[in-house]
Length: 124
Image 1 (cartoon, rainbow, N blue to C red):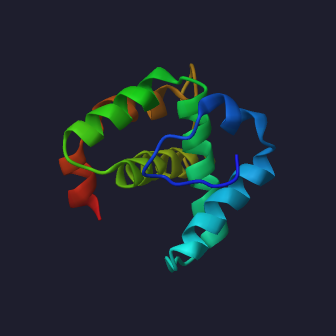
Image 2 (image 1 turned 90 degrees about the vertical axis):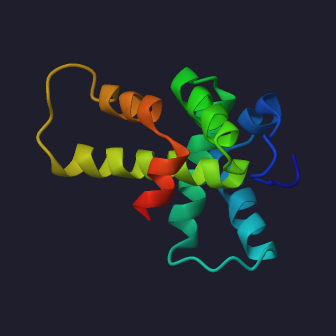
């Protein structure tokens, strides 16, 4: 795999064959080529890579959310950002809020299932 374009799903097997640092660099390079200015390119690329990993690994709530968001009018890149925003909020909660009993990732998966394009667009 030589290039990444968030508007097109990467081949899952080819994506997962890459080292994590290669995945992140592909995302960084995409944003540099497009001259997309970001406050923190590395964090943005890591978030893209984590979401793409979840999709390539077949995490059902992520895949369903992506499909739903695209059906609701977001392009794939915007949908990846929407999923990434849920991921980052979950990570913030994990590090800053008391943990409940049970699966620490259950709130993330539930948030993905509730995510809509309208909600994401109105959040930012």
